[in-house]
Length: 132
Image (tube, rainbow, N blue to C red; front, side):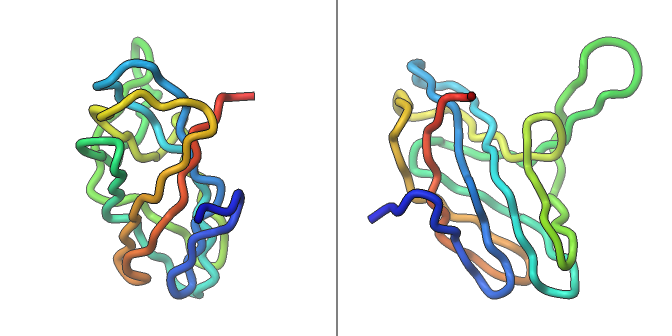
């Protein structure tokens, strides 16, 4: 059973407030919003994220320098700072969930899996939520 804002916990890592925006189109690419809280004195990194409603995921960063609009480029891992909070948002480093398998309606909830280099894998509740 999914319980609202209950964090996912693995070792010293909590994943909080994981959400994606609704989409009616199958095959959409959607950014994942979430916050990683690391209580460990050493840094970690997010190495994989899997969701049942998307065929693939990709860890990306947004390059804002140079001419033209910002562009996304893939990264191997997303660093998670020691003893603190790391927010993953579409404006910086984040996870893109690619090729949705179904429409995503506000209020839908899914269990996904995040894998961290040191903390290991954990189940993460993800809510489909319209932006405020």
